[in-house]
Amino acid sequence: MPDTTVRSQSEVVLIGAGIMSATLGLILKELQPDIKIEIYERLDMAAAESSDAWNNAGTGHSAFCELNYTPESEDGSINPKKAISIAESFEVSRQFWAYLVQQNKVSSPENFIKSIPHMSFVWGEKNVEYLKTRFEALNSNPLFKQMVFSTDFAKLKEWMPLVMEGRNESVKVAATSMAIGTDVNFGELTRSIFSYLTKLDGVTMYFNHEVQKLRQREDKSWRIKVIDLATGQKRKTYTKFVFIGAGGGSLPLLEKANVPEGKGYGGFPVSGQWLKCTNPEVIAKHQAKVYGKASVGAPPMSVPHIDSRMINGERQLLFGPFAGFSTRFLKNGSYSDLPLSIKPDNIIPMIAAGIKNIPLTKYLIEQVRQSPKDRINALREYVPGARSKDWKLERAGQRVQVIKKDEKEGGILEFGTEVITTADGSLAVLLGASPGASTAVSIMVDLIGRCFKDEIETPEWQEKLKVMIPSYGQTLNDNPALLDQIRKDTASVLKLNN
Figure 1 (cartoon, one colour):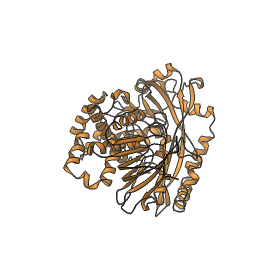
Figure 2 (cartoon, rainbow, N blue to C red; figure 1 turned 90 degrees about the horizontal axis):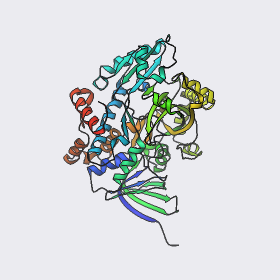
Figure 3 (cartoon, one colour; figure 1 turned 30 degrees about the horizontal axis):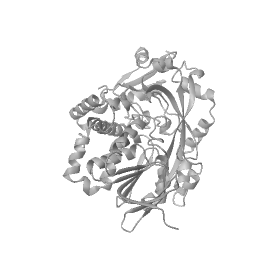
C-alpha cells in the first residue's frame, strides 16, 4: 500500500490552541517575521478548554484580591512576594495587549478587557485582622498603592451592595478594593490573536488534529505524528522546537516526549462548577470581583468569589467555583486520563503527594457530596439574600495540579504554573493552573529566554521586546514613576480606568 502520510516541516510547533500558544506564537512571529509555525488543536476551535471564559476559574488575576497569594505565616505576618510577582506580571500582559491594539493586530480592546473593581472581603475578628495585615504588607508597594481598606459597614455597602444587603451589622467585616482591577475574557483574546496570527505567511493552524507521538531525533529536532480526527489522515511534521500548551493534556504529551526533564511528574485533576445567576435584576446589583478566604484544604482555584463578568457581550454573575474530582485531564477528555498517566517514574511522587494532602482529598469528597441546598448556603455567606430560583449550576473547567519529585518529601503537589524546558531548549511544556492566563506574557518571554538563548541576546530581539513591552528588563515595583506612566498609557489604549 502506498504511504499516504502527509509530511511537513517548520521551525516551531505549538500543541494546543489556548492563550499560551497564541501568546508565544505571536511574540515569536514579531521577533522573527519569517519564522514558520504550525499549530495543532484537538478540538474544532481555539480556546475551548482552560482559556474559555466559562472554564477559566478567575479572570484578570493580578493579586489585587486573591487572598491565596498572600498566605498568613504562623507568626501572623504576611509575605507579599508572590502577590507582587503576579501583579508585576499582569502589568507586562497589559503592555503587550496594548501594543497589539495599537498595531491593529487584535480587535477592539472592549471585546476582551474591561475595568471592574477587585475586592477582598472577610468577616470575623481574626479574618479582619488578617486582611488589615495583608493590606499593610501590600499597600506600601507601588503596585498596590491604590488599594483602599475599610471596616465601615456603610462604605462596604457602597462598594458591594449585593454582598452587604441583609447582612448582620453586629458581625465584624472588612474589605479592600482596587478600582483599577480588570475583567479579561481570555477566550475572546485568544481567538482574536489567532485570527491575526493565522493570516500571516508561514503560520498554519490545524483543528481536529491530535498529536499521537513525539520523538526527538539524533540531530535534536523533533518528529511529531498527528492524526486528523475528522478524516483519519495521518501527518508527520518535523520541527526544531515544540511547545506543549495543551492545558490538562500537557502531561500525557510530556510523557510521550520521553525526555529526562519530564521524569517524575504526575497530575492531580480537579473539576469545577459555578452557580450562575439567571436573574437580570440581581446581576445588575453587583459590579465587582469579590474574593474571600478558601476553606481548609481547598486548592487555590477553589477560592470562593462572587464574580461579575462580561461573556459574549452580556454581563454575567457567577459564584464559586465548587471543586470536584474527575479522572479526566480535560473537560473534553477521557476518564482514563489519570490512570494512563501513572508511570513507574511518577508513582512514588504521586503516592507521597497524596498522603501529604489528605485535607485536600477530604475537601474534594465533601464538595462532590454537596447538595443544591449546600451550595446555596455557601452562596448566602457572600449574598445573604440569595434565592435558589435565581441561580443554576454550570459546569466549569478542568484543572490538573502538578505533582513532582521532591528529595525530602518524595513528592509534592504544586498549585501554580510550571514550565519544563529541556536542556537543549528544543522542547517546552506548560503544566499547572492559576494564575497562568493572566501572566501568559511574562511566562512566554521567560520561556523564550530559556529556549532561544542566543537569539534573545541579539540587539534586534532586545529592541523589539522593548517596543512590545516598554518595561522589559525593568521592575515596575522598584520604579514608581515608570509604573504610573505604564498604567496611564495602557489604560488609555485599552480603554480602562486608571
